[in-house]
Amino acid sequence: MKSILTLFSHSWNMLARDKRSFLIVFLFQAIPGIVVLITVLSFFAFLQWGVPFFWESVYSLIEFLTTTSWIIVLVILSLLLLLVFIAFQTLCYYCAQKWLTHLFHKKKITATLLISEWKGVWSWAGTWLSILSYFIGFFVLCLILALLATLINDSVVIGVFILWFLWFIFLWVSLYLAIPGYFLDDKRYFLSAKNAFSLVRHRWWKTFGYVAGVLIFAAVVSFLFITLEKIVGFGISRAPETLTSLPAFGVFASIIYVLYAFVQLGINVLVQIFLSAFCFQLYSFYQ
Image (cartoon, rainbow, N blue to C red):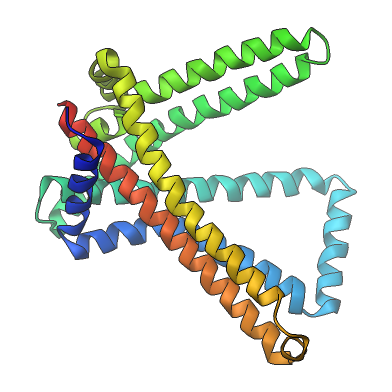
């Protein structure tokens, strides 16, 4: 049996094969997170240093909208913005996975090849909506079970929730290789899902071990950088009062936190790309 360390090595070699292609995959994977991070940082910066009069005007406008029939318009606009972002994130993910596919196949990427790939965007959008609807259905069911807990025996609800959660884990592991099949073999998602079921059917526990191992590795890497953030934050909070009283100290601390936020985003993106490469390698191994 091929060890998980061998799969780790193959995944690393796959990503290190072409630095330029890896950088493009990284950019496509990171763009949605960068947009969210810049939006959040801009909001808090304006909240902290914005013009008070302008901010009071915005607050008054929001208060007016939320106390009139305009609340419906506000909700619709919020949903439209959310849908636009989801569509943008789906497009970026598709581009990253396609580029990763060419990296796996060792293809020379040309402009003609990239243009020909755009026809699959709509198919992937429908696939992503199907996957997203399942997860939404899962959480809606959990919410319904939580509401039913006030009407019936709590132990019954907990038992049903545990069974549903186990079914979710089983289905998630069984479909773990569906996305690599979609991109590597250029199949429709339901055909790749059927193929993933057949590949995992008689080695579910082994697949679960591979998935658990790579997720533990990703969690350890993320935890190390979260711990680093706590250490940096603790060091800044324990700085001498003579230093913290300086006007420049606040600016310095803000810059440190912003830089760390972007570094943390970059680490998370690297982990996501490595997880995708590992998934591709596991699919190839099972094939």
